[in-house]
Length: 198
Figure (cartoon, rainbow, N blue to C red):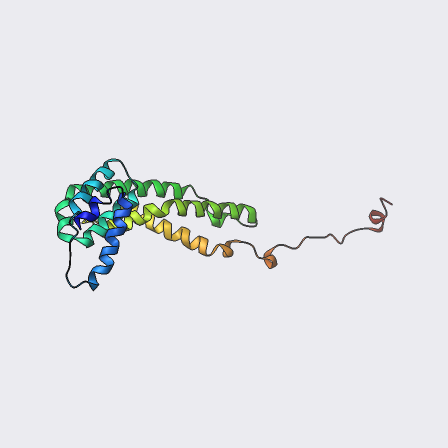
């Protein structure tokens, strides 16, 4: 197993996480539980990656998968201080995402203008897409953290659910053809007005 790491030092943290995840998936079918011999090396890779401000979702997923691969090793390395640092970091990320969500238009205030409604829906779609990795990072983190989710994390999760529901039900916000007002025609026209331009 040690040779696995030495032969693949070119892999980045995301690729190593995928390998650990695969090992976790097959371990229940193995006669003996085994511990990869290169976890210390991977932890050093993670520490360097973390100091370089790597993508939050990749780091959080690595920690979560590692906690399943070898819980004892993980508890030794993942200190309370690191847990608190990650809690603060992801809380700040959630606050930023929540603030962006508050800038989105209120769909209940848009009626009768499908173009404006479609533009608003596109903004919700963009926000949700850009927020997805942050949301996944927080969910992975909460699986290993000793801290309760912060208020910002909870609010962020509510906003993600709200945006998803709006996009899933976007048709209910668009006007149906039978809801559009009929054009009005005046019947109070005199004979003189009809022939005025002839």
